[in-house]
Length: 613
Ligand code: ADP
Ligand code: ZN
Picture 1 (cartoon, protein in one colour):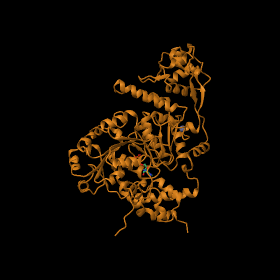
Picture 2 (tube, rainbow, N blue to C red):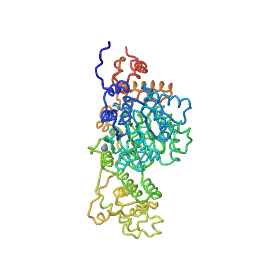
Picture 3 (cartoon, protein in one colour):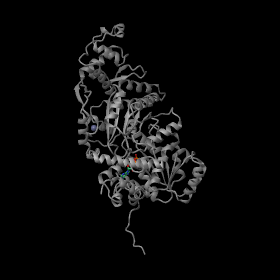
Picture 4 (spheres, rainbow, N blue to C red):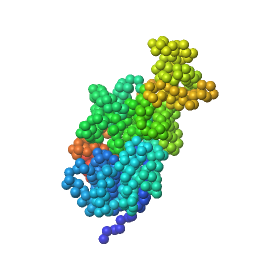
């Protein structure tokens, strides 16, 4: 007779045996136990925090099939592929599949063979599918990207609203809703609309310490972009967000001409082109995706090393969500953005054009102000970002541009007074270009025609060059002292708080735009602040890392799957550091589970041990 095996907790066993990890992160274990015990849960965790395990492990511990609702069909397939690589019985159901495959999957659901089924909400709520579920044992419902249920969020999907039916129809099946978006109103909406008010809420901190935030001014955007890519991101994958389809095309083309492997993605491209480009982004190394916001929801690629914004996003929520696609593997990644006053005016213009009700417009306006305040801050970017999301306060992070390169500030009270009174004296009818011309005493045609050279403020601002005045005006807007006209001409209006400034009752602290620092100095400070795991220094380590990646890419190409579903960069880096000699060593590498050990250990061991006697 077999000896009785020591009691192993099933969820721990699955974590190490299937996923190859030896400990849970953050709240994962509490959440998993809660759901295994049949509880409902609302999980708010930043991108890359490890939300998937929170339902995947309970799905495997509880009897029956787990139903996972996810908004985008293309991405479901990636998740399913990744699970199949781990030896998990998972499938996705959608109408593009051949009928025979659908039938087989349905059979596997009924027989209890299948552990997880991924479906889109509109499919889930069809009477056919609900009837099928009636015939199955159900382990749980997981509702991924749960913020899609909220109009406050940025990805509202009406079909999500109907998911509230699940509670009525299957009251005994636990439900777990997950999202990375967690501002207060969205959170409240998720609870109410999905009927999760009794669910236990798990709110993780929202910080993404491995993402470095940098924000600069737009001067020569294409050059700034290629400089950055060449100097700091050669050979890496990343996403570049642009406002318009035209600009996406233009930037992608100009990058290709410079030898980068860049692809466009926007809603105006044919479906095949889009999915082809997305596929290459996922499956090849070092592809740069130039895209509108149409791209990226739920993109699971863990080794996106940079997310660039060449235009301002719509709000801080959107910024956080979009930049959150960088560095999901926990390795250093960058969020880099450049913007100008024109961007700001354009966003105000767009907001004014929307036919949303007044209350909604006011909210949008406030969101714009918060975004601009974030761009113009002299404080640690991460502090400002986390405060906005009501997260726990942190010390200055040491991994954003204002920490790495502290901004010099100066008493700008007098400058503000000059600027505000010029706006006032010209009837609040003009934008920055004309107002700055007046301050600098320029004899432009317009000034002469309007006789603005007669104003008492004409020529009183020559102590600052044009560039600096632009920065001052942006900051005055960010501080709420000026508003950009909602009618869309970009003219300035005085903000409510400008009176005490004009009367000299308050001081205004302004930032001086940072001078360029050498890259070496930046790197040095960054490393100091972020620790040794940030980069590989040793050339031999780097060579091994590249060799492992090359082998991974071959394997991935053979199977037609994205490289990271074989092993992600972090796992490869662990191999570089540990230099495993045999299967035993390999089994100890985080990210190497039983199934992957069987399939891939030998081939990666041969790469590691090449040249070793
Ligand atoms: P999210 O869905 O929250 O954005 P994922 O579930 O995709 O994040 O997880 C992000 C990465 O972290 C994945 O590569 C995942 O395998 C890894 N991960 C998750 N949990 C753990 C853990 N306990 N230990 C090590 N790695 C983990
Ligand atoms: Zn900081």
